[in-house]
Amino acid sequence: MWERIVDIINEGKKFIITTHLFSEGDAIGSELALKRFLCGLNKEAVIVNNEALPAVYRCFDPDKDVKFLKNRDVNINLNDYDAIFIVDVADWSQLGDFADMIKASRITKICIDHHPTNSGFADINVIVKDASSAGELIYDLITYMNEEITLEVATPLYLAIATDTGWFKFSNTSATAFKACSALIKAGVKSEIIYEKLYQNKHLSYLKLLNLALGNLRSECDGRLVWTKMTKEMIKSSGVKFVDTDVIIDLIRAVNEVEVVVLFRELGERKTKVSFRSKHTIDVSKLASDFGGGGHVRAAGASLNEPIDIAIGDVISAANELMEETTACVSSGSSLT
Ligand SMILES: [Mn+2]
Image (cartoon, rainbow, N blue to C red; front, side, top):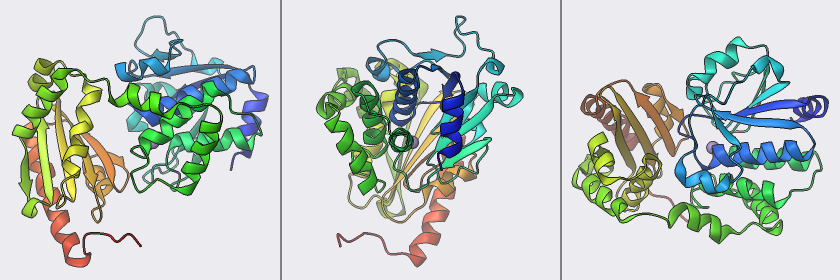
């Protein structure tokens, strides 16, 4: 599956790498690893994202390799490049304003992704639905090319795989993911330091925001569907960075009877970000795609151009309906064997 991409890498000189809006560990880790790998092959590679890097990930990019499209210093003519790698992206809509620029250019568009909703929008698509993460695919590409994995490539790859598997807790935690991580640890990755940088760096304000969000908690379907909201004001007054606001989802999912968690975050007067998680039976990617978003069976999201309370009404009634349909045919809970 890598042949064409390997030819393009070998024959080309200049590459661009990008990823989705609201970039997180898999997106950023895959980009940084690919850039460092390509530079190690004496190629020129730049990372250009729609948005600035979220603060929590900045320590993974000490050389400030991730450029921000809206920054004036970034003056890119896509036609000067041999190819653009679009990683961890399932659809053009996840690329924001950058999508139109990319579509309008003659550049060869390569997508490396693992989202089941990806329909193959690029010129060359490597979409592996069973891969735990885009990072696992970048690892596979590098090993396919028989290249050694240096520590500077291994660290962002580990970041990608570890975060997308929820630190090896989610159902995408596979033997292949562990095999890749085993090699990455052998290359010198310090798993505990990555964990600490990501998750043990919160300010006291984080607990205050959690307190407010837990105050908004509502449950439906006998507690199987639980949701909460964070308004712009709550997030702003707490001082918590947006990227840190989704951890509440895992807290809620820890409750035994909960099957689906929905978190609504207000981005603007008519803009609401909705995040979905499920445990056993509900395919939340269906729900997300009904609202113009996408994702995985157990984790998905959408952005709605609606005020937060309208979005809550629409999404929760759809979630209720889906849960009623699903309970009829599937039993919840799963067995260890
Ligand atoms: Mn991913």
